[in-house]
Image (cartoon, rainbow, N blue to C red; front, side, top):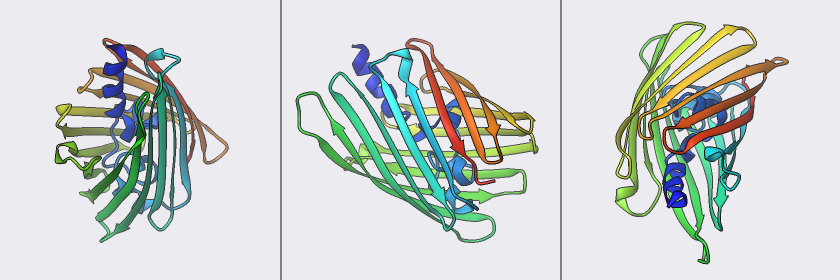
Length: 251
């Protein structure tokens, strides 16, 4: 019973499986550069230098539920993301390629195309095509909006939709609010706050109403472009999921 429930919860989070995005409640539709690689392919159109994110997670504190991911974006609007988790003979692997272009100074469009490999216990692996389209719009220097459509299987019921905004009241604070819809999870909200009290530290908090999950984390910048980050996500029924990761920033 627990494994069936956690399988559903995991699948709902695989699009946002890096340590910073998880700490922000899965938000990121309006973020740009490497911060958008797991949330909106349009965002990588703003990548000015190679960026990457590697994350490991122990979902719900269970040794059997290990999740690992790696994602990167490059100047020219190219990106790649990989994610894998497994438990009790079950495994799920995602591999996506991303491409994005800036249509105008304010508008960016991106696409994602990949494969989802699922291996149920004592069954042959199943492969399904993953597609997605993302759009971003800069309303002003401080306000950005984003939207995404995804389809993970050949069945039309697997479509999901999301839209959201990000507001930067200052250079130190970034606020995000989003609405997501999928047939399995219904309509739900995601909210995130990041705050940079000093140059080398960033604090992150988030809320995902689909699973009533609270999250938070801290990142510490090493050298000029590297950040070491840790986070925890708390599910009201299944407990705490610890995460750790390494982030290569574009600046």
